[in-house]
Length: 222
Image 1 (cartoon, rainbow, N blue to C red):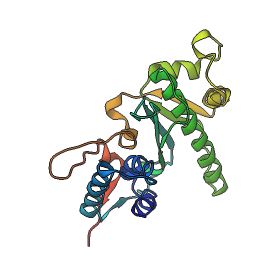
Image 2: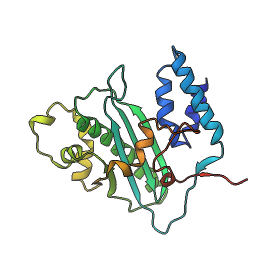
Image 3: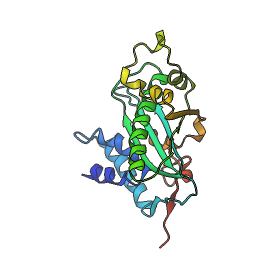
Image 4: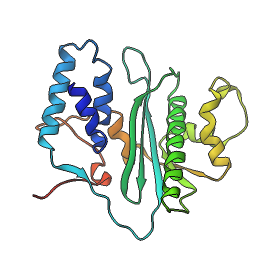
């Protein structure tokens, strides 16, 4: 029940996305370490109850996406975790942290899978915004910190290293060829989506969220 309530909070708290998806995997049979992790999460939420997202006004709306993957993040299944964040202007409007359904042997394949999922979300968000009267958002910039996955997405030539990648993963490549998506390399230290992939620990609060200020999470004033 507590995980369900935390999952509800992820609709406005991207900083909770990773820990909630991690805890949700053990709802059917939680052990002591999972209860401890849940307690730490509740303590963090209690210390940040007034934190929220500020949707800032801007003269020109642009849509950009950040995708990343933590390769073989799950110690039991060896599956990677996908994370992405979409920004409209300077404000986050969509984000996700989810364990991938396929095991990959290399980080570039896992990153490519994450890019495909982010591209699908970009397509849906663009259509939604166009129905709301917001036009001219494409090509959307998709930022990734893996050079190999960017090369796979930009290179339409079939070759030995990518022959085993499922066809639906090439959705990103099709969007690039159609001019709907523009791929860009972004160093790992500048990735906003890192908070959707890992736990970050520091004294006192127990959490460290890199680049959190760029996601416009702010303490409300009472």
